[in-house]
Image (cartoon, rainbow, N blue to C red; front, side):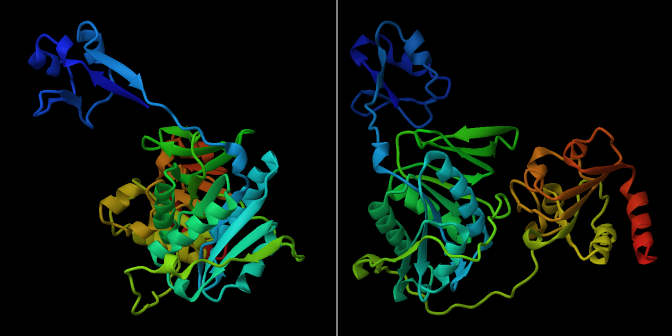
Length: 395
């Protein structure tokens, strides 16, 4: 990483030199020395216009990791009392594809209490090794304790890459692990690939979905990435078991924390758009909050869930848990009916893996038609009521 070094003795007018920075990042310290704060964009104007050798760019020495010492693609097993979250199975499928490409193995790290038997289920999905940390102190999720377990696993196994589901726990745990190992983490990846040198290619939308950024972590290991549920394909469950289950011990002192769980109150389970097989999604084409009832009726008739785009959430017309897109939920239903949705990438990135996409929009040039399997050009206020009527008549 480059840094700026200032030679005050070669600057004739300090005040004029400081004013060169268009970002106001140059400061005069109490000692009289000149420094650049966090506002510095490395535009190098102070180098070009500073005169002589007043400013010098120095490259800091880089530490390069020995990649040969890191092997395997690991998956964090997200679960609730031993019941494995489906996103874990999806990540195992992707880990298998990545590992096969570079000749590595697939590992799972499973931590909790009373989970030894539950770990056997993972061996039906082509995992090479499941590392099980079964400890009474891991019954409830406590960030410090789970991070300590993750650290122990990484130090002993040294996986080259770790995939974590972008669940409530995964979103908190992965950054802690990345910070502890001073390595990179890419959140909400939509595509994963791997190079022959084991560099994980992490692809995700950036700048509001206007570009797809390819991110690599070439000088650090392990590499971490989080992936949302319903983005990857889960492998088929095999009737036979393959792989190995390894029971791991960890020093009890490493699990000691200042946090104590006094009580756990289960939340009432409700239907979510992520698990829905059929979704009716509405966008800017809906004229009022009251009109959402029309589309909710359609969803109810076909056994689906109602969803929306971001503008409707911002308007207060629908709850954020119904939002599809980069800043909302990722869905993968068998059928999604998009009503009055233009199809900006922020929305389509959250639903373009649906089995069938049916779009209704009066703008025949709307981007939604580029991803839709079937499209109907017309006013949703004319088409949807007719569709509801036909369904009610059994037609």
